[in-house]
Length: 159
Image 1 (tube, rainbow, N blue to C red):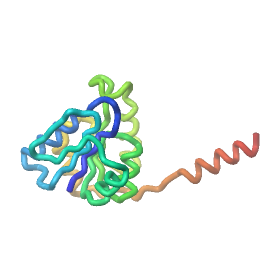
Image 2 (cartoon, rainbow, N blue to C red):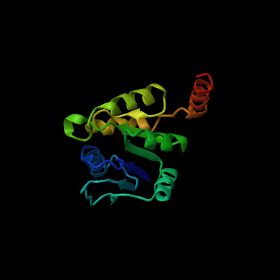
Image 3 (cartoon, rainbow, N blue to C red):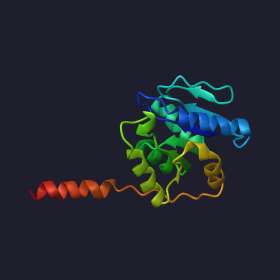
Image 4 (cartoon, rainbow, N blue to C red):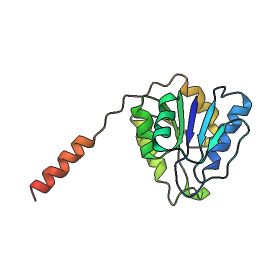
């Protein structure tokens, strides 16, 4: 099963959902596809679509998936990478009114540079990313949270 999630923003990310649906219809995706479409009116006759899932359902879908296709939200990427999933992440862009700025471009670059995800700047190139996903071995995610907490504690203690 492939899990597709576009987050919970108040705007849609139908560019990504349409690209996934196109690949299903072309036969490039043969697995069941479950979509969390957020605040979108997106419907599909070839994918199971729900606007939202509970946190436990969401985590279970990630756990059961063979591949996660997502917007470039840090939380979603970290959840999927922590579950040792192959992740294709595509940024929401301001020019399409999917976001207020293009910060998700920086997110996919950073996670890609570190070897955690397959970046997909243009959803129309999903077919290529799907091919890469068949051989991609994501790097094991290492959290930096403990180091950040220590830095903050040291700063507070010394000021």
